[in-house]
Length: 629
Image (tube, rainbow, N blue to C red; front, side):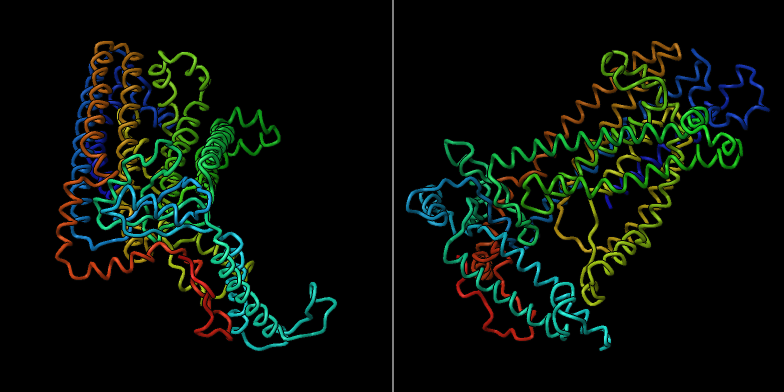
């Protein structure tokens, strides 16, 4: 919600300045050139952009002043928000009860020793080098086969539950055997119950086999007697070999993503490289799609591509819909399929927490929307290509000043189209459609769905919100007419997402404000982009003094960003020794700490070891024959 509050504050000020100062200045600028105002309907949007101001006009100093004003306001709000969230983060930590992930770290790359198990090696190492703070550890096991068995049993249990909840009809009976063609007719319920019983027995046997054979992987959660002890072990390199005894921050137990623990250091490194290349490839593909979508905004180009539509395009209503609304709608629909792909890419990189996967996917999505939605549409909307800008970086401000204003009408339509997507979030239309399709394809029952409370997709929503912030700041001095539409978007978004967060979604993990640095850095990038465009536009408008006086703005903005990075970012990455020791000392008089440490021993035990009791023949004795240590 803080991202909406921050955006509302920024664009409330921006809209006031843009509508009541810059918009009249842009509109009045055309009167200096004796334009025929009877032609306004044909180019009304151009009359409200900076291109309507006469070259060398003193009116451009209003835009110059507005650029400084909005930069100061945005930086002040960024500083205030960073400071507020930092203090809230520390206060939340001080007021929190003892939590397992504050006392634990994840250790990977554990070296194998002859005659010793991974568990013995971990205990020996930490007893030797962290004797006063080490408490216990939990070794991670290779459980891929066991997970498949449990997944099969859960799917079969859903089918069985669905059959039991449906009326008893002849349809509940059909031929058994392969595809029901060759075996005798048998009761499907009885068949499923027998298969489920067999699967649960296989699960118990597999759990016992893993416990006996000790199929350990070189990774373990190591717990300490204090938060400070865990933080010290996390920050210090444990071995002379930097790829052995690699420490990572432990996630919350319910945030752990277990399937990818078996990946080695080299496998994770290779997967990151592969994912990086795949992400670049996806962005390039979408650049081509964006180029085609932009072609729809030009009737001449569309008639060249699709000559058989020439007669239809002569109809005014059809041409207006195709060139105005259809391109942004296509872009919205296609971009909605990208977040799941980016999340899949992040999952392949070997992250061990859902929060880490979503944060990584958020970064990828942010790069995607900036390049594939903003720059792709800006650069493909004119003869200027991305290659020309890369080959001649000194001309970036001038080229941006030419191509960015030309796409103002497209992005206004894009923002307005986004109002529809916000409304669909309130009704969760896409989730309803996916649920109906999934129910018929996977035989899910209504009883199962009742317990699947959705959570917000940070990796898709945050980049989308930041894209509109980028559009608003970039077009602030160029086409201020876009500002009211963006302000309406944030107002609707605040109302809808406030309801969704309080009444619909249930968080899978505590973010602790860790997404805010992404918001901060993207806003700084948006300001720098605005400054570059302003430098170019003042140069094109033959006001070299204004162009020169804008130059300190990006430098000062980057210095401000560096200060915030030094002042606040460390608070979002780790807690200070002062905070940790104070919290540890306060817990010394807490009588419940003994019980907490008893639970901490099993806090990071893989849920795969828990007994399953779906079968009607299960009882309290259906538990693993041997338990994992």
